[in-house]
Image (cartoon, rainbow, N blue to C red; front, side, top):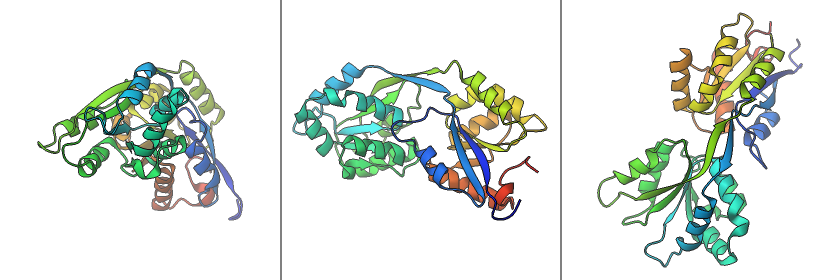
Length: 295
């Protein structure tokens, strides 16, 4: 292969493709690495459905009045799924509620994708905070630093499976800095019953082809583990693993006894791409040799 010849590298994202914008697809499809052109493919691991939307609507209408001392002081939203649940009830809110919510409500988020989704929804960009925090621990520290003294409680919108690091960190902070957090579950998650078959089929079709496999959560890693274990022990496997965040990394080590090849420092496509770039440079893999098993 000549230096100028490009090579398609499939990159399998084990997640549901976000709508209307999927940041990982947009970034990787438009940012080749040396002579490697990424071909994104999304394989849904989990299905999500919204719950408690009537409760959420009531909270937004009745408990976000800045003049009311018993109202919430802001929202905490840590995933795009939560943002999608919020988005689904926006058309049902009164105009005065929307105006107040969008103009005056502070929203703390993890990751720029979630932040961008909320700005597109209508929240003032100056009120969307924490986009570079990267994880719940960092976001909790940012809230403690930026929220001020004697704050009102925050409303944390979340899925039913979550780590409670944010509410715990805020509630046990020293007196005068501690913050009450009320949690409202707005979506539930179930396994996509067709995932294992579809994932196995894709891996089989890509036999002897190099590819990246990206895992986003411990739950997703658990569901993918049987197919991954079979693939990674095959002599012809051309798979590289990437994990989004240290929690998923640790889970892969525990379950597969193997560290992922790349761990994204932040839950962003830029961070993942940079991790892959550093990996290829470190291993002196260039251009059409961007991954293994394709000699």
